[in-house]
Image 1: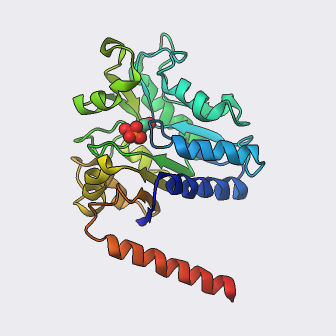
Image 2 (image 1 turned 90 degrees about the horizontal axis):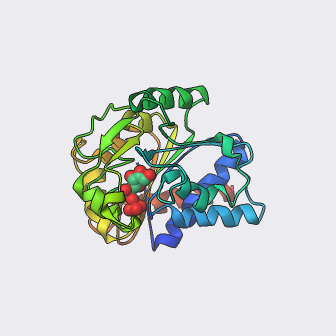
Length: 265
Ligand code: F6R
């Protein structure tokens, strides 16, 4: 894991945006794995600004989102489809036909959505860069604690904790879906590169458990320890409980020196 600890959430967003810029520059038709929630919004704003400054284009890109509520109308402002249109898709030049979420179409059997989504991801060549947030309980996507570490896209029941964390987005509790369709942990692990973003002290325990604790389905993000190419972007607050923090800073310093030496050579 490449653990990068930055001063604040702005720096986390800037670092994440630079990774997208590099990928889309090298591979304009990249397949991007996207997340919703509060954490990636600053990153998406940076990407929109970069697009406005002609520093990147999504014209040829394809996107797959991690999750969507089950039974929600895609036009509902609280659907993740609406969130993505608002926060990223509509302000940039992406072709909406190339944006996918694990949505259950009217009349479709919800149990068929997962296998269909997995097949679609495969048919597009797999995900090049997957963005992740992390729940306070360590979930990635909506893979709640005890999710199988080899799970695939499927229906999940949200924990009370996750429902409480997301209640603020809904006008009334009765309007909040209790079920979601989420990419599984194995689906996420198939991505060629993964970037986990965590900001704020509320995430500090989940970050510590997932990075420094044992690999366990009780902290689903800990599965990322088994992936070869994961970058963890943290602000100071989210990193505050890490026991090996000095080491992570030291590693980044060494990397920077190596890059400077190479650049100067
Ligand atoms: C959203 C998702 C979730 C969130 C997580 C953190 O698509 O998959 O795993 O990333 O719940 O949410 P925030 O960023 O709102 O704290």
